[in-house]
Length: 251
Ligand SMILES: Nc1ncnc2c1ncn2[C@@H]1O[C@H](COP(=O)(O)O)[C@@H](OP(=O)(O)O)[C@H]1O
Ligand SMILES: [Mg+2]
Image 1 (cartoon, rainbow, N blue to C red):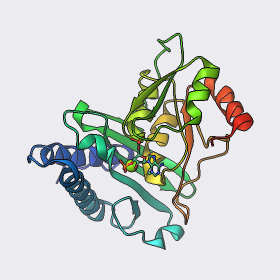
Image 2 (image 1 turned 60 degrees about the horizontal axis):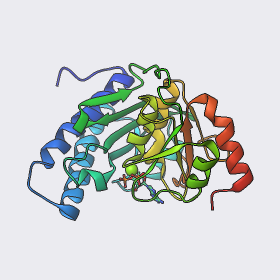
Image 3 (image 1 turned 90 degrees about the vertical axis):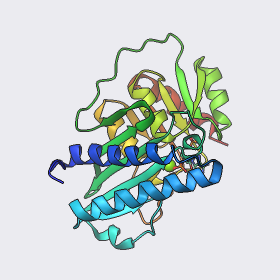
């Protein structure tokens, strides 16, 4: 292949788009339910693993769909991959709230991110950071999980006079803040590094605030890849959300 980008930012976007094309074709195979979810996870993982091995052979990889090779803990460069985020929504055509996540972690920091939304034909990445548009809503909109919304977010919304916007996929929810479809994404109760690494890299490049729900730093490429909570929001909402969590907790 001659058209594979050399630059990591463009490579990440390209890789996420290649997986997206594969996932769209899996969706045409007539499968349903569990079979469709599994076929999507497997096809996207296989393609991404093969392309990383071919084009970035010296780098380590952490993927939701692969065995965790702990050699990554001593590596300088680690690709953090969710081949299909929002698997549930992927299996419910024609829903478009599912994504492919490709992030690169280098010596302690997320440096590159790409989130493809194949059903929308859009990819958001650090190759061309999006400036978040002016906020169009009067009341804040908080994106939450469609299937597992954390209970405390109802009380947070009441305090902020915000409305909740349920949707699938961590990546789609983070990008909804980048796109001014929502003003914040608040999650607790469980998630892993691959669910939010690429979205957070893109959100940071767009100027959004990103942290754990207690305001502490999001840390990646750890031995334990559980990263159960996060806030991604317009900077002006960060203090209010962190303050709410400090006073009320997330239980
Ligand atoms: N409580 C929880 N525990 C573990 N993973 C969770 C979770 N809530 C959400 N996630 C993961 O975060 C991603 C987005 O979820 P949601 O759409 O509910 O917001 C999903 O990734 P996958 O689709 O890659 O499995 C889901 O598995
Ligand atoms: Mg995921």
